[in-house]
Image (cartoon, rainbow, N blue to C red; front, side, top):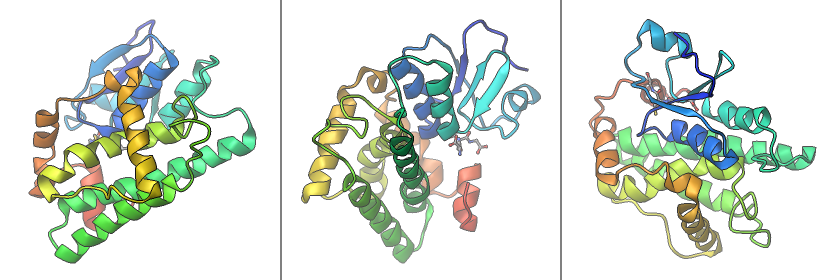
Length: 240
Ligand SMILES: N[C@@H](CCC(=O)N[C@@H](CS)C(=O)NCC(=O)O)C(=O)O
């Protein structure tokens, strides 16, 4: 059942990188909202009424549901029209932000799940290369003259799409896969400066999980026991 609240309601799961995006977007915009911790794997009728796909994040606002993390970020930006924009007002710059936000979703994050789930050595090496190449490519696009973020002095949609996975690259992958991103080279120096600046941002700080619990939550990906849409897509080699 949709929760009737005068405030927008964020259905979130503390461990979820997709939900973290919607959470950061709401905090960045300074929106007052109600936080509901939701177990997305328990597909009760009440939960499916909020999001028929049964995935976090979902935002319920004015009695209507919005879901899919990328859509949630844009919704938050458009529904609360403040000066603090997550997408630029210039149509061409907005297209640029969408292109690179899609790049995060299609060319970077998927390798995180592949690296955790695949047993085959060559597939794991391919996933590591996918992360390294993806980070290198996207940081080749960062204009550091404007600021530490893709959004300049403040976060935009690209920063919000990427950060939750960048955090897991730093915290989860060294633990399970002894994987760390290279430190050297212009693009990686930019990456680490960006990452440090993100960690200083209040909207991001408020969403950071406990690292021990976060690592533990990914054990089921590494032993292939996880039952989730994303995991099924990685097993089948399809998109999610
Ligand atoms: N494409 C979705 C993915 C969301 C997603 O997969 N969330 C996970 C938690 S991290 C979930 O709700 N899983 C429940 C399930 O797969 O049944 C988005 O960007 O919002």
